[in-house]
Image 1 (tube, rainbow, N blue to C red):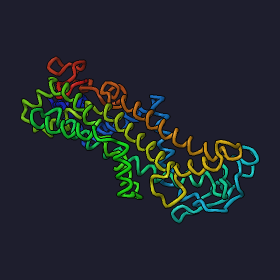
Image 2 (cartoon, helix red, strand yellow; image 1 turned 180 degrees about the vertical axis):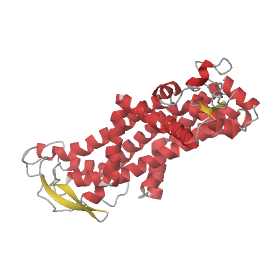
Image 3 (cartoon, rainbow, N blue to C red; image 1 turned 90 degrees about the vertical axis):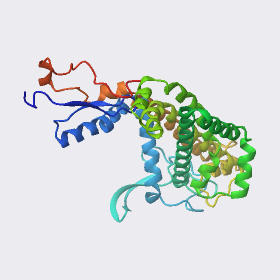
Length: 377
């Protein structure tokens, strides 16, 4: 029989049930299209069809734009740049004096722009509140991203290796985890801050999350202890795959929703810890554009006592709440993205064989998925 009537099929991508059946007779462009559909288009469809993920991604994109592009579009806050304690949206939302049409330059290109005249008001020395929030965002995003990566990489690696290896490796790593978890968190943090005086957001993100990885490692170890006895992991062991390969390709993908939730919790913890320490004056700062410093200045200048200064206190609080909520919604939505059944439903190229082969008795049954290591979990 011709090759067109009997395409050779084989299972690809075992990792945690994300595998599909590829057709060796497909052209390279069709294979690339299938890979892009499974790993890019399908996750985007899952996110778009989930309200929580859609809201979370929208908010995160907004914060990303504000952190990356905002400082190039909005001038840095300075003392006396505006009248004192101007309220938000001065003159009303429509027809107010807080906006005007103008042009601006972005990376050397002149673009039409909506000039904002302190839309969120000013503080007691004439600094714009919006300007302070925007210029504080890059530092906050750098800090929480560093903390999230540090906690996720270290916690996942240690927890997965301890849970899968067992024996002395598990005992040694579990002892290290227990020691780190028993260290007094706040006193240790205050000592490190006093000794290091971290001003870099990267260093500060690591310092503030120095203990968070241990809790994540312990929880992941418990998950891996269950996963390592599953049939697809035993099949990978029988094939002679190395321990790092099995952990990376068969174990970690199955705990990714759990990893995402823990990463988000670590990032939120860094947000609250940094804002709290800046508010208390325990962290050094070189600029006023900082959410914690803004809260401290607003609180000490009557932000909770007078309506004239209430916006000074509320705006950074709203920014903190929105960023925290965006991270939570994003993590909840990613739980569906890492679900192989949900991904398969949203992929356009997950059929097992071509329609022409289904009429041949010798060809595989289209309703029967090809076996692959790491089936749907």
